[in-house]
Length: 158
Image 1 (cartoon, one colour):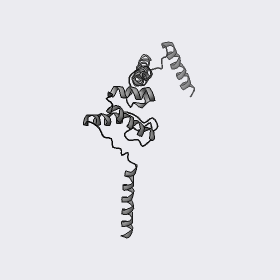
Image 2 (cartoon, rainbow, N blue to C red):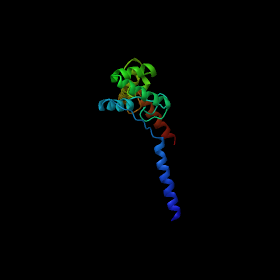
Image 3 (spheres, one colour):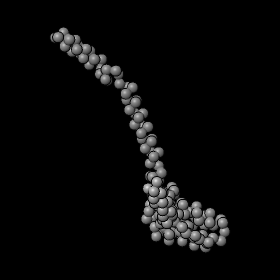
């Protein structure tokens, strides 16, 4: 019984310590609309260091700086598009989770469609070429007769 109590106490401490690593920042916004825009943009922008986290969830110092910058720009009256453009100009298109359709990203956006079309074409051509063959493996009538004659001769030798 004492062992269960010790394990339960350790587990509780472990859970309590997990909150220490959470991102906790509070910013004062002049309106609730700005706070909503902040939340939306901070989940849309990717941390340049972490790569698989948005700046809202990342503890990296650069994400902290980007959150501060985002807050300042929102309070200064910048539009969402101006903020996105600034971040892309500074960190590249990679900073966006949903990159714009453009020259460099066109291949990424179109690659699945192109691969699907190519696979369909290969399957179509493969099935079409199989239908064109006869059951004898594509042999001419003379070759089929010669094959039958060879098989009869062989059976006659047995």
